[in-house]
Structures are given as structure tokens and as C-alpha cells.
Length: 298
Image 1 (cartoon, rainbow, N blue to C red):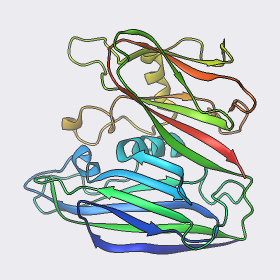
Image 2 (cartoon, one colour; image 1 turned 90 degrees about the horizontal axis):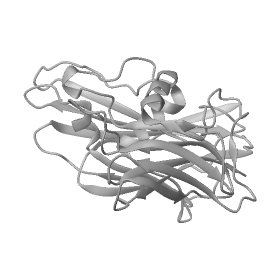
Image 3 (cartoon, helix red, strand yellow; image 1 turned 180 degrees about the vertical axis):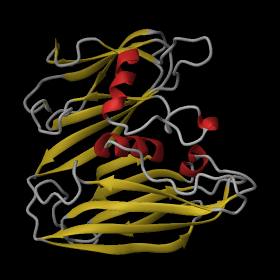
Image 4 (spheres, one colour; image 1 turned 60 degrees about the horizontal axis):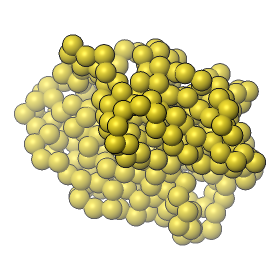
């Protein structure tokens, strides 16, 4: 099978804007977004670098396929590829060039002709990159974006990755949130505001469970403490790139994983269900960001 890797944006000077780009028409495996720049005085942390990219959105004729903040996309990369995205030159030299690359996935595996985004017509599929230029951390920054097309592929499914921002419920305790119905759910990514710090055992979400038609399915009582332990199956090495970061970037992430072996055996099929919800037992009255990763049949 033939593939085409092409450049969509080359050495583009970053700005505070929403940059819209038409995507190629052949079936798409993935996009590669790379941001590079120079250290300002000392080492820019990963958190500072990733802050240049606010949100990555892919739409097909106005319908959202992927809509993720950069922190959530970084975490999704670690989930799918079982290792952290590349950040070069972890040194503190002033003006040292740094480069961070993120993958925008249309399938759980790259170069999979059975699981990628299907062919479209010119102008139908677009990428919007919402960026900000922070001051004092990285300068002379540029963006490069490439696409990998799978010529002649006939996919049967593709990934849809969308956020669900849950407002603070007003109290601690159980908070029931309806999840989308109709597709197979690969995982629910949970980004909390509060994770344990000094002299604290507190998690924003203490316990999570999934209810399908009001019956527990898979996760009946998953404590945050143990969900953190599951990260060893998805992150290749100890979190963090420098001591100052203190934790995985983005921090405060756990997954309710319905594809732990990557073989489709445990996917949560929501087709025909009346109700699919996550019940989060809140340890803190705070907002929570969920990312729902679904497989959509073509």
C-alpha cells in the first residue's frame, strides 16, 4: 500500500490566532504537529512549551472529529503509543533550540488502513490550531505540520476524540455525567484539577464507575489511587522531564481503559443503549475535564 507524507505548514512563525488549514483528501492516518523555539535564559519546561498550543480541532463539514486542548492531546498520545511525545534538548542553555511534537490520531495505530479517517473532498476536512505566544519562556517559535495519507485505504472505522468539560457540581460526593451513545468507547480520559500534594491524599475524583442502562459495566469502583497505578501500562518511563516539573505533563490524568490489550475485546459498545454515564465520586468540589475516545464505524 502507498502512503504520502506531506507538509501542510512549514516554519510558520507562531502568533496568537486560530490558524485554519485544509487537510488532504486521501484517507488520513495521522497528523504531526511540531513546535520549536529557543530557551529564554534557562530551560523552558514542557508545561511552558505546550502552552503555546491552546487547542487542536479537526472538523468534517463542520462536525467535530477531534477537539482537544494540547494537554489532553499530549496525554492521549501517551495512552495510544505507550510513551511520552518527544521533547528535544532537555538542557538549560540560553537560546538552545527545543522541539515538541504531538500526533493527531485518526486510528489507534498509525498506518492502519482499516482504522483511519476516510477519504474526503477538497475543503471538507479542516484543522484549526488555536495558538498563543507566551512571554518569557520560549522565543523565535515556529510551527511545522505534516500529514500521513494512506492511498487506497478503505477504513471500517476511525477515532473520534472529544472533550466533556464538567462544571464543579456544587458539592463533594457522587456526580453523574451522561456519556455519548452510539459508538464504541475506547477509553474515558479524566483530567482532574486536584491531585495529592504535600501532606495531602486528596484527589479531585476519588472514585469512578461506568453505568450502562443503570448497571455497572467494567468499572464498578475504580479508585484514583489505583488508576494512577494503571498509568504504568500506558507511560513508558517515570513521569517528568526535569525535577521542577514534579509530575507527568499534563498532570492529574487517569484513564478508564476499555482497550487494555489493544485487541477490541473489552470495548464499551454504546449502540442501542438508553443511558451510558460516568459516576464520579468527587473528593473536591471542582471542575473536571473528560475526553471521550470513540471508534466510529464508517
